[in-house]
Length: 503
Image (tube, rainbow, N blue to C red):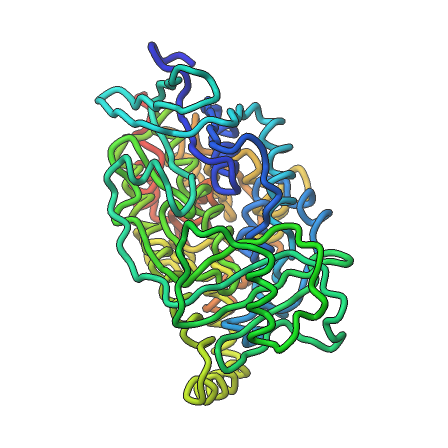
């Protein structure tokens, strides 16, 4: 460890997709981490069912995407409130969503985390938090008679929408309450017509059904203006009765794997950081699961936070760097809450909403509208507020083909180690000199772009840059189109990766 009195550098509460992704990011940076999970084992439930382009790119940046592609299925379409979006021709190597059950995603994540040395403690529920100037003491309720404590420098709550970490930290969770009830189940559905397509709207709500794996369907029923008690168990009979009310039949529903309930409540933590405690994933934001954005946003929260937290823990950057996590990701969360509120409203029954959906559907066929919505749903169009006027500043870097002295590579292959990269595409001596003070934490790579223009969502193609400073999360911290402004480069290096080494 190297820190007197500490059991670990970081405790992560929650071993779901967000917590495991953050743990892997921290371990790649050499940070010691312990994940605590209140469950005794995996439940087998799979609320999320897929990953969008940006999440696939993030996994590609770490060199593990093939593991997930091997167990999922790519699909060429997505949707906005059940209205189809076309993902063909997207400005990404991975334009199509990957259909993959959350339980499978977590299994592959666990294997990767184990390889990196992540420790997971099951049956360990956070019951108390005490912060001081040096660290945070985490009290755990376990199967043992006496409470257990862990001492760490930081704690990250990835413990879901009812986050204990958020509540114990006194972080407000404002937003809008639920106005409807949805039931979800993975079941056999032998009598579903072969020509049934995804979603059907009804006078009192809507239902959807889609194949997950051979013989099994995910069924979701949504009924408006009725909100169930959150603590009331969801049952197979409730799902069957709801489907009959909406569809007039249960399509022979049988053999449920699991049943769950959700609504359209939309809430977001007032702040993502309280001293040495941070929030990520559903602990920081909940919303109607329209467009399949929840798991993706949590994974991307983790990748934004991971390198920043690692830099602070290792003494390479000031603690103020952690404030940029809230600044960047809170804005993203606000936008997702808004678009999911819009999707929930568009799905409501009634003649007025039927007319609005018809108008909305006629607009989606325009390339500009389709591009805007798919960029938002996939998160490829995110631009963080970083200094600089270059079109790539703040955006995720395109995965361009590069020619290096060692052969042909891709930009994302340079990010496998989760370290910052200064990519010099013109062989500038000034760029090489500027980064010398950060040589211990930034990798300088000289290469040539194989293409004169790079594709960027919402911008089309732009001229290949002269130089790029790429953060470990794949977003551009600084870019130059012509002769590099090395003073701007040094400012960016200091802002994101701490002060230069003396001498």
